Image 1 (cartoon, rainbow, N blue to C red):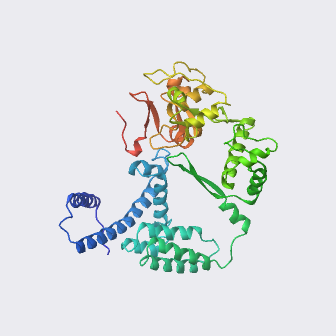
Image 2 (image 1 turned 30 degrees about the vertical axis):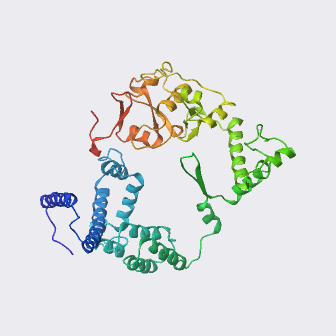
Image 3 (image 1 turned 90 degrees about the horizontal axis):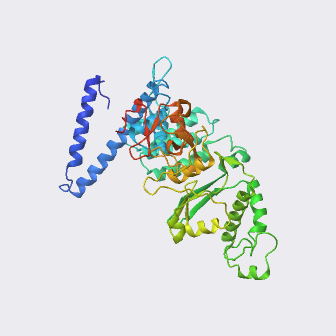
Length: 442
């Protein structure tokens, strides 16, 4: 249903009334409704929410055309959505992609154009399909080969848009997958290109035991290297952590082989761990952000004395103290002493522009990673930043004047109008540019 265009004041007034009515409904008890009523209300709310997504597309599309690099102080439209709406970076990018596919467009002459995927956009504006349906269809076209004709694309969108009004998003995925297998009349791309895109290893989050699930695909060359190493280091009796002196060099004796009750998967794991440890110990990895490429672990004296609890590594991983003590038995150590009240190192100060290795290690222990709120980048991904005054502006490279920022967040400070300062509690505060409208901390 189309309505006559409103003037600015009337539209803003309608939004005030819309918010007030939403607050009234949210505060109302739904206990007075029957089961039939609840089914009707839930369906109606879903249809309304789906239709509102189309309004979001129009708003985001308009923002993307109105905001320039100058007015945004160099911040991208994605950054503005993240900080204004307090949503994740992935969700902000998804909304931008949705707006590009389903939002209104204009020609260079200013003439209105239909959305890129008009059938899907129309169904969403009616509330017939949801965001999940729309994203299944958008991703289908993103993966579609460029050689598919325009007529075939239009027919595919009509098919998927109609199916979406009758299916769940999961069922729609199956339809989209089947359609993608039949629509590409030029055949698949060369296998080496497909294989190259599929390669990758994903290391999942740590669970309560500290274990991480690993999944992915390795290409034939990588597999060949792994199999060659595993033929030695993953053999029975080799690199066995249960042995007091695990055999790494040479052949294991017969007793070591007989004692080895590990599964093949466990032997592969222990061989990979031994490979990484040997490579780190080789000293051939060079430096990373001013430090030798090595394992940096931060723990308290109480933890080391008790052998309990978890320490944190420079990349944000959690390492149990039993493992820390075992690693420490054949490692070079740095000792940093902290004042018990301020948690500031008593002496690690310098006045040169570049932070010393000791200062970087101290920041690893003090801050653990990027200090920008919401950023989870570990310390090993971070650069050292002068917190209150840059070195060129008279700031000194003292440990209590430094902070950590990952490379993307550091760019916010150097080119996009953000700045940092020392808060009342001695920690780093991040202040956004005025365009984001978030204000400053007191």
